[in-house]
Length: 207
Image (cartoon, rainbow, N blue to C red; front, side, top):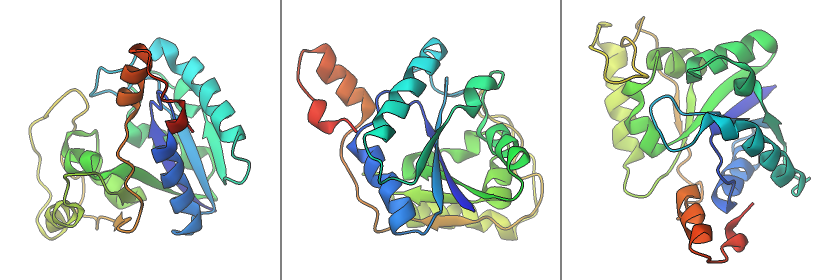
């Protein structure tokens, strides 16, 4: 099967996440979406790893409310030692399910920042990514900038942050698919958390 790996803190899941998951299976032809609940992003300090199990259970409940979805909530990162680098998660999934093909899903904002990620070259060449639009980001330009690396000699670059590693370990061809027609839902989990904290009923935006 061809699996889309959609990871994040999902704190909480909302209609934007739902729209992306539907697009992946209904428009892009993925057989399944694995919704991977991350305990903590190695380069962001926006959520506590201690809430990982709670967010996982909430994700299971949210997906269960949409039985039409081809989505499985996967807790693989909850069982992995920190830091939960994306490349380690993809390698673990590939080892667990060698007959499946995995493609990582991320927003254009994260693609623009992917050089900070551990072994980002392997993510792009060994697995490939499907990129959904984010307001204010030119996906085509970002993709072109990264693809230019594929015709240049592999080089080493200084680490750019706690999740950074070396640049491309080889000269592999990047696989970057743009989800150009995917819906853009202008809502974020942080905005929903702020609304609830302020006593505003934003439940209509929850998945």
